[in-house]
Length: 203
Image (cartoon, rainbow, N blue to C red; front, top):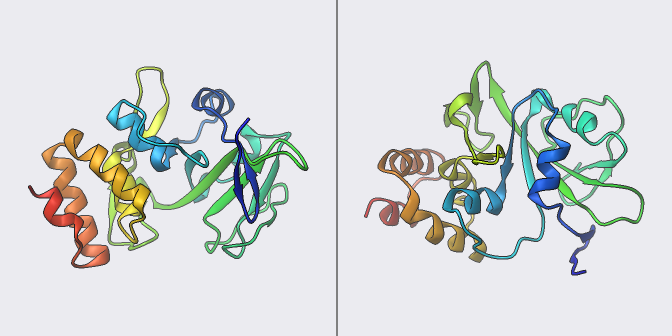
């Protein structure tokens, strides 16, 4: 078995089928995020992934403990370090990531990302002016797996694009609709200012 090694431990990402199974009974909305969300939008494998990301709204964070009741949950608090997340603890707004694994010494399997909301709107933590109705935040596969809309995921990747983010953008460009492109251009420009992705999105 191949593991992704990090300073905070090794990763063996859970397959999407396992993620869907574990979150099947969660009543709150959740979405597969990260590079895997781009792959689900594109409909093919793009690259290797060191982890698997699941996005939940901050207000629904305790759903993680319900979905993974027998696992360990560790909060990235502060970013770059991990601490145990205790049962029923409300994480502060400074915590955006939770790493989860079946038990001590086991590889990390699922990373939870927490995002903000107001009423029925998603609110970007990067810039609260960037918003979207919750029912427009994601899509769903034919197999019933919810995933973050590619333009929203690319908005996050656009802040400081890494090589893998450039790969994801190149793969997603052919499948983005005009509406998705225009939303992404507006969001990037508002949050980050002038950006090299804008010209590519407007071609």
